[in-house]
Picture 1 (cartoon, rainbow, N blue to C red):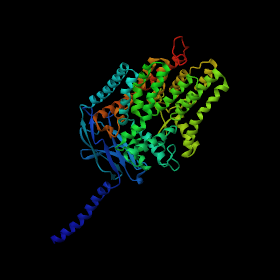
Picture 2: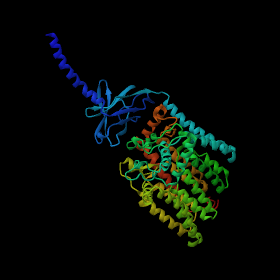
Picture 3: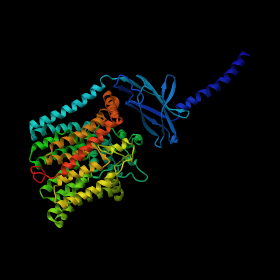
Picture 4: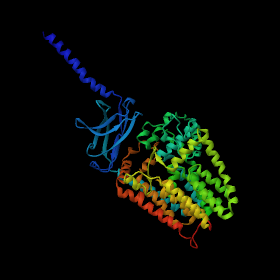
Length: 592
């Protein structure tokens, strides 16, 4: 009797246990995965902020099967024995979402936090991360900025003491030492990937249809630099024996939700060597620009002012941008135009535009000035010098597909710059006010900037004012006032023009503006090579710096002041200063 009762009870309990365990087992094996980063948050504040306050956001990488596309997933946190919702997000067709959530007292305490992702009755693994107070984080962040400022000041003082030639012995190694271990991670990815795509025989300017890689990861600048990037990678392979990455490996799966982390697709152990090779033209361009400025002004001190400038160091040696190359070509164009060698002037300006578009604005200015000086026939003849750059550009586009399609991408991307395909505003422009007001940006450059530029050309001819430096500078200021992107590196273009005019105060102000913006709007540690600091938020100093960035963007009055009000005021005042009648004794390129 007892044995029969036992078997009966067992027959009841086993199915019940199976039914109880099966959902949990299914929940843990539904194909949703979750990781949290960093695994240990070195929080720089001794108290966790209240909900809604400025704070640091923990990052969550979520993977899931394609079958969940367009489904709502929920990020949850554990409080005691209960799970509570943090936020919802929609699964995409890529099967990967990177999302983040600010650390506040509503869901986090010092210690260990647990999170998971829910999809109906299906749950991911439980991811944990630690939160601890790092009392030294803020001080280390401040010390990093102080060390940078002190180094730049010492660099400049040594330059004024040493003289140009002796200063080069210090300056060249300093630039080269910075180059491998730094770089704006997002931009360096594009420097690298564009050349690799060339070597893969994949069009780096258009992903094709169907796309070989995501459209937002295309190279949206003129086509010359990717050829150099490909050459750099071949040299890199010769030194390291590295293999050519596959096409798919260059696409980080989270590009759709967190574009600025696309660099994670390619972080080889020998990355510093490759980055140094990629930056060599930029570093060389900075020094050659300084040399030309000394020749054009007759003062070696001008070269020191240029090479010791912190913005020049940042853009040429640290950032990894094309502006130094294009600016060298622009200054060389001015140098030859000053000497009456229009052919050389057009040649250098056109090749500068084939690297980064902006030197193209000089060509019509020089043409109109030449027509006013020597007549139409004599002025037009040297314009054939643009043919080599145009032919090379068309040839590179044609080698990888449709010339017209590639040109349309370039014209649209530069005429109406976008971010990940969406029209946006960025940098030091009054249009940032539109961002704060949640108003759609207006493409004023096409509707207002281009007509004003055309009017300037008419004015140059009518008034017989052939100061090309001045009108190039005015054109850039008009661009700054009408373009929806005025990134910090754009100021690199205008600094040599102020030096040629002898406007030292303007030179200082236009150096300070982008540096002040970057100090507020950028995380310093994002410029440290991922070969050194793979996760930029692994240290408390970087978290402190990111809280500073978050505060800047969340504080409307401060954001508008630094990003819009002060820069726009400076642009307008500088424009008026350029357009005032030139008084006797004012330095221009005509009398240098």
